[in-house]
Image (cartoon, rainbow, N blue to C red; front, side, top):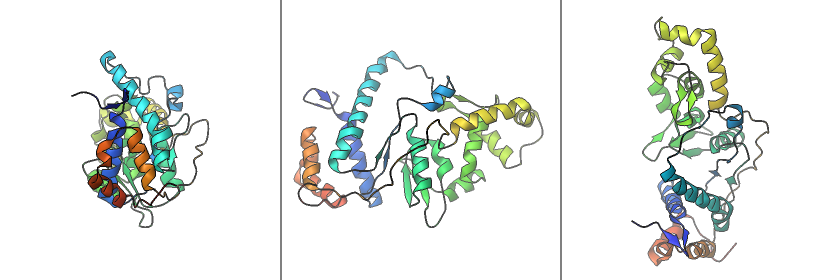
Length: 271
């Protein structure tokens, strides 16, 4: 299958992203979104040279480059043109950091959409500002987390600091996995080599260094500075302009656009 493009520019990632936004808006009956993006520069990488130091298959380099270009286009042009105003990015920080900052500083009911289990530490059962996670399969709540692990969500960062994080190439204490870390924090890990490793001076050193990498938000050199989220207002012609500009004709079919209009409560005209 050939890659989706318009006027010789790849647009498949943008199309898929917008389609996902529509599906999420429909699923959760909301038109209010906050978008958080990774910075290319990383404070974590400055502090830990091996952080996310994965070898990329040369065959995938061009694919990744094109995807990044389209994500940049989404952040700088597509989303703002459509009327999305809560689009956050700050040099040195990852999207996870901005999400953590946002849910802590601007309490509200949030559903975090991500497959990244680092974000489990942000779950909250606060009845005034509950935070859950949708991983594209299920909605996970703080109660779900506690039922599964016997811990409070904030303790997940400690679990990761003990066991490490394979996806981010963060090394934990050798020989300690997630299951062992959870047992230790629940005070049910039996005396033995694993417990000795965790409580050794070397184990404590590794845990301290790793915790700084996995805890959210990251304590970087510059404080996170993002504006308070605001309610978005959307206009039908702004959506149409974007769909036409990028050749997304399927979104412009009357029946489909009527769905966009209904889900996002589009006003007439332009903003």
